[in-house]
Image 1 (tube, rainbow, N blue to C red):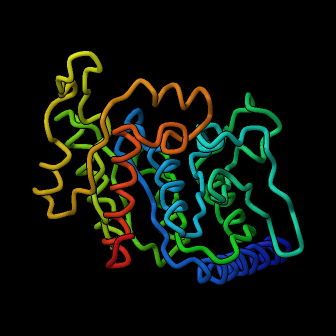
Image 2: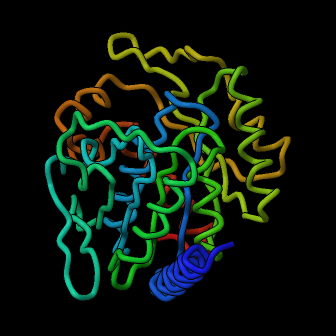
Amino acid sequence: MSAPESDFRSKLIKRIREQEEAIKRKMAKVKYKIAIISGKGGVGKSFISANLSVALATMNRDVGILDVDFHGPSIPKLLGLRNRKMISTPTGLIPVIGPAGVRVVSIDFMLPSEETPVIWRGPLKANVLRELLSMIDWSDLDYLIIDLPPGTGDEPLSVAQLIRDLTGLIVVTIPSDLSRIVVERAVSFAKELNIKVLGVIENMSYFVCPKCGSTYRIFGKGAGMKIAEEMGIRFLGEIPLDPRVSECTDEETPIIIRYPNTEVAKAILQIARTLLEEVEGKTD
């Protein structure tokens, strides 16, 4: 190795260590760090991440949410924060303030436009995530919710490596039996990295006909609860299907704010209470 190459390598290693120390200092101000994962896309993971964050904030918790889905960031839209930008200060990047005071960080805030694609390979994504985590000024938080992209690839692994004291992982699934394998893979991912699995949330569990009141299990029955029982982890709750979820997504408003009396909103609030019990040992 030539002298310039050796010098560059030494500077790079020093920079990485400085960033990792900065992450450690900043994460020390966050009581509970919870990552939300799904084995595959299309199960409503980001919808749950966004609404669960707001639910916790309404329970007098200081909450932040980190959108790690670099290729498909959706948290800003779900919380009505598109086209916003983070502010750079001497203490670091200041998150955008969302509904109920939730502090939000997303790669979407750093792109020139919504149409700008993120064409990054794994090592680059890991570097960007490390630098981003080292720069964010979350201040003091009770909860940091980390919305991971689907699967168990680069971003989930990088989060696990950079945030060493993760409180735990929540797995989101739907009730179809087909989702069993991908859920088991996500749970195995957590166990391999020695991360506690806080529980399973089953989304799109059932649909209640508004005309006749009949309940329909469109995607199957109870796969989420069955998986939780078989794998010895907690079942945090089930969330029904409701057309107003799509309406709220289009209107960029969390359903627990727009329609607080719906079964969906009530289910999310109950899951938030169950999570407080699991993490803090108490409910509100």
